[in-house]
Amino acid sequence: MSRGRWGGSLGAFSIGALCSTAAAAILKDRPPGGVERWTRTSHIGRPVTVFEGPAYVVGAVAGALAGGAGAPAAVAGLGAGAFGALDDLVGDSSSKGLRGHLAAACRGDVTTGTIKIVGLGVTGLLTAWIVDRSRERTGPMATLVGGAVIAGSANVVNLFDLRPGRALKVVLLLSAPIVAGGRGTHLSTVTAGAAAGAAMSALPNDLAGRSMLGDTGANSAGALLGTALVGRTGPRGRLLALAVVTALTLASEKVSFTKVIESTPGLRELDALGRPPR
Image (tube, rainbow, N blue to C red):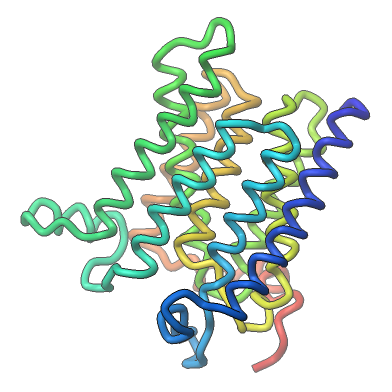
């Protein structure tokens, strides 16, 4: 990668981390609607805040814009974050998973999850269209697939936000090859760098079980990673990415990712890395 791209990625990473830290501090000091509105119960029954989600969105989008990623990163990060916030703040748990929300929609019950699914699809398609409008030899089908990749990525990262630090580790692991890849575009490397910077900022409190991304942060992080991937791939690469995203989404309806991770050597240790003992 050229020195300019390294500089842009590093700048986006740094600004993403700093702005995310600052936003989290402000939200913690003056939580809109009170602390209770932003408090959830973790998998071990302890209180955990979701301040991390909007703070992540602010940091990642600010870093991407400062690095010159422009409208695609803003639309993906803010759009996915907004639809995630809808589910975080006013959603209920009566329907879970893609199948649950679609089944509820078929019964005429439009859940916040259903609205989020549609919203992520629109956000992904709009983002892919903005990315592709300045590229040559990118047809409507490639843009449609790219939109599905972005929307699907937003959902996939959210599927991993079930244990402290897990989703953020996924973001960091997926960001690294995009930033380091020699064929990456400025959009992709800067967007991935900003996503990683905000993730690094949030990681200590997340690992400690004090905060979590929630749908707001996880959907935004996934959409930004999807945008970075779409920004550096053509039709074939997008089809491959969509196949992987679709496979993970369908698998999540049948298999517990947590059980798979905890029963797989290597993944189990990576998942627990940095997490304090109960």
